[in-house]
Length: 265
Image 1 (cartoon, helix red, strand yellow):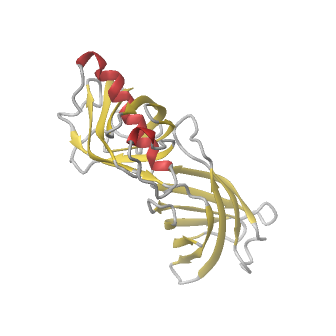
Image 2 (cartoon, rainbow, N blue to C red):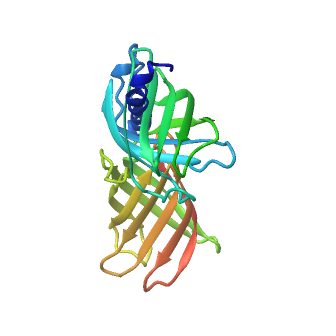
């Protein structure tokens, strides 16, 4: 992705935003002859397996398509140089061949991401990212995986299980907001049906949520019985499988916790 030096910052910025944005777009099955026309608005995540990086994983929301994109990224976890969900504004572009470069300021330095937009507009291949200067500076550019995560929207069914093998069956109707918030996170709305479970008067509503990259947190609250259940976990890149790595029950029914999974119909 070499470019004329005086245009480097603009091109890097455009590229970073574009690649991250692709992660939130639904998979429309379209292959773009000109990658610059691929949709880029949505939820993206980038990470690297290189040990010791000050920013090992970033997620964010992008808005736009083609050669002009803006967005907000953030560290997925608090590190020595950045706080989780601390907004990093980015801007960038991609050319007709898919060559993508992006950049934005972070902790007194400059975040730079490069790669080639895939023909289906859902990932950046041959990608690297780097931070030059400031508190998060890398020793050198790191190889990165940069992926578009489809929207968590639709009807999901599955169950929550606790350590005593008790099962809570659930059907969830979820809609992910099309745009990210000021920190680059996405919100969910919807309802959940817990069947005949005595702790909930179904359906109950989503009262708190967050989607960022391939992770989610979701709270259902029953305003009548005063119980709530919060589920945290990850989801597949196509948005169809939610893996609940931990859920907790709180309220008059008492405390409980466990794991679970939900699959889109």
